Image (cartoon, rainbow, N blue to C red; front, side):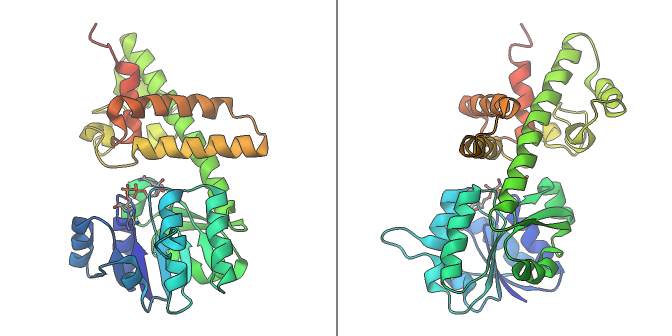
Length: 300
Ligand code: NAD
């Protein structure tokens, strides 16, 4: 298939690489030149603009930071028309970014008005899953669109779920990430408490992993430096899933709770912790760096 891929960051870059490995022809676009060069080296062709990337595409995939970027791309602004207006064919449009369900619905409605199929397909599994091609895709949109997208998504992921109508993928993803933010901050809190009381963080991690507090963060993403060689914590919290993005996702959960009159006291707590951590200059660090919040003043 001829695929346009827009947004080659921590996630988009390995996802696009896996599509090339699966035999698709890719034309890529990102605002960052070096990101496009890396994909060119993998066999993609590089476009000078998003509009050029989608020319002749059968499928368009976007992997952008937040709702404002997705809306700007597809719907444009007062003076710049969006991609939906400038498509020369009728490609299937898949947005894999994590954004508000209402933003997905807004783009989906505009796409549908032009006879286009739009799906929200946020992912879970992190950069490790993106590189290994084992992501979980959580799709919202029509059954026909889902069936069309599935073989393409299977080139980047292991599990592909159909959550419901447009926006349903985002709702499920936001619930998942709210729980992840709670689990990561709770894990960091427990490790800091143990270490403060003389325990070795690696030993404590192993004990909790085999006990009732075991969780994903401890299994594959330990937040304490040096416990897990390949985790971002052991690489000065570089790469991975940015604190800014986790703060955004917890904000999305909070907005969703407000709109639906749901109560999310644990999610609100995690949102405040991540907002505080980001405001202290840690926004570009991996989200497991929340551990540092619990270690502040450790030396004293
Ligand atoms: P990132 O910040 O690393 O990458 C985003 C990329 O989009 C950047 O390369 C940026 O230059 C590009 N970009 C921004 N605006 C653009 C535009 N108008 N046109 C073209 N390119 C543009 O972010 P990421 O970690 O890859 O995450 C992307 C999305 O996936 C986010 O919504 C995030 O919440 C979600 N997500 C991330 C992870 C993770 O572990 N990193 C996991 C699951 C979901």
